Image 1 (tube, rainbow, N blue to C red):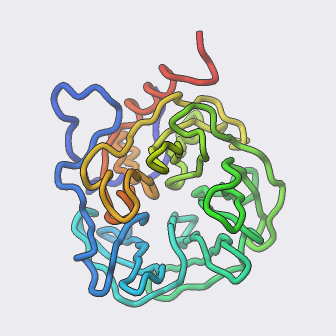
Image 2 (cartoon, rainbow, N blue to C red):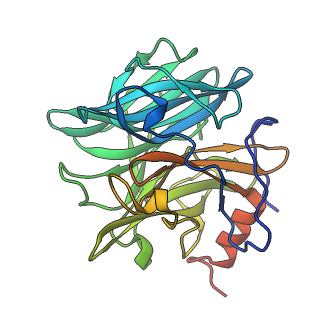
Image 3 (cartoon, one colour):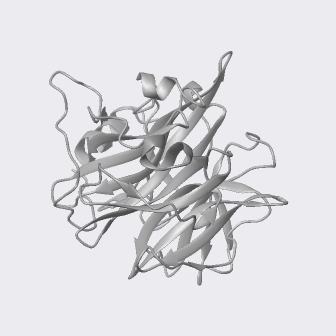
Amino acid sequence: MSKIIGENISNLPWQEKPSGYTYPVWRYSGNPIITRDNLQGANSIFNSAVVPFKDGFAGVFRVDTRTRDQVIVTGRSKDAVHWTLDEKVIFYGYDPRICKIDDKYYLSWVKLTPHGTVIGIAYTADFESWTELEEATYPVARNGVLFPRKINGEYMLLVRPCDRGHTPYGDIFIQSSKDLEFWGKYRFVMGPVKNWEMTKVGAGPTPIELDDGWLLFYHGVITSCNGFTYSMGAAILDKNEPWKVLHRADSYLLAPHEIYETVGDVPNVVFPCAALADAETGRIAIYYGAADTSVGLAFTTVEDTVKYIKEHDLLNRD
């Protein structure tokens, strides 16, 4: 059985799998946990990320304001379910991810420029002051997700190159850097394969290190006569060469089924951006944007997810 390599999070939010439920990921019964009511002036709050911090949790949150500006703010929580958000805007842009590398917390987000979207990177030690680094991609990209440690002496960033529009180019690539300033060694990781993800795929939360690889949750998009539908998939990447996919589930693990996922500013969206993983118990709490309107919480275990991936493996069918 795969094991999580990382810290123990004894206060990780958790709810047991419902009796008789057979799928590997299940929703928190109190969803959505964050709505526009959590912050004055918000039109919607979604696609956000959290990490353990001190004796509780801290996070970075995408807020679309009532002027429909796209901004990022910080937030704090004791239990990772009930959040207090700060009105101060730390950056403009959207879809943040956050991870701890050594003694700093690194934010990656979709930064808006006159020439298109790029991946911005900044770091903090206290979630109050931030140091912004060079943009990691140029001219256009989305879904920039850092690995939580160096691999073979280099930082790694998953990214989806795109154009100035919304969808063209649907593949996940990886790039590396020795200093978080100069990036290169671009390699293909994965592209759409099955119908549920056929339009595009993009990296989700910070990859979770296992003893035998990296667990990657990602989003996949299908285009139907009713528009886009975003769902969550999962794969396992090679430990030392994470551009190599070892296992990949052929079907989604979570898709928009509940009313807060199917109805909102952008209907039919489950967009994972963060995952808290407890090494001791193997429990995982996943945070996802719901219908581009609110934040939902779901649960799984490393055993449930890895078993599902391998039993529904696209790459290694018996």
